[in-house]
Length: 313
Image (cartoon, rainbow, N blue to C red; front, side):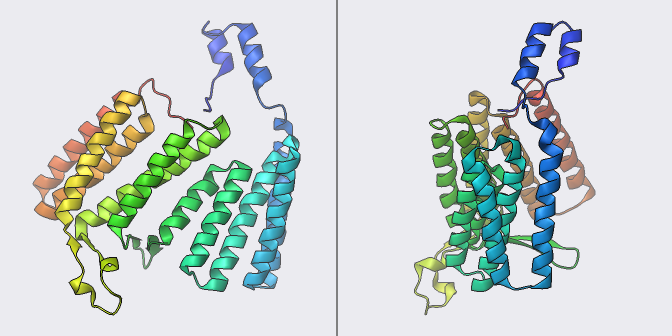
């Protein structure tokens, strides 16, 4: 857990003694002076790699450069070079992204390639202690079952091809990651929590899409059979289950003192409300007014709850 404290202000207010302040400062990272050098070298290395890729735009080049950058970062991490920790993370992150991009381009985004990218991101994330790479690993896994986003002519869209599978798969992953975080050391517990949180986002996305269009379970029928013969989970089922899960998660989060989960439940509760409200009643001045008032009440409730709370990093 990371906490930001204004040491000078706390000493002025008498809430911290000068001795305690000195001790806290001593616990701070000793290598902050090398941060600028780390970042300059890291960005320089990445810029050179991108320049080479621009001159020779081939996926094999991306794979090779990604492997080299990742290897350099991994070397710094394994040697325990704290002074070059930021550089190591930059190299690992850039290397993993280049390697994954090259693999995806070479294989035209096959499921096997997506699984390989998931492993690359997860492995690099664990080595680099990078929550970003762990989150990308979970997102890459979701792509294996058809989850994706896109942009077209000032329009953004979210696609979840298999809402039911998405909900089940990432609910299980979220629970497993959360339980694992209780048994791991601080660094790895943080990564597990990141995986669990990303999974919860995908679970809610699955419910959201399912609550609008339902889910035709095409994987229950033979590939030679038309999809209209596949069983269907109706949209109302997703809608009811979603609000049930949101309420249940919110109650658990409040009792377990998990502000992040409670805030997530509140946000998606509002999204669920808005979606069903306007889907059923349409957008009229009255419905917009009621929706706005409801949202303001919810926002005040979240603000009141978050006062004095610390959101775990």
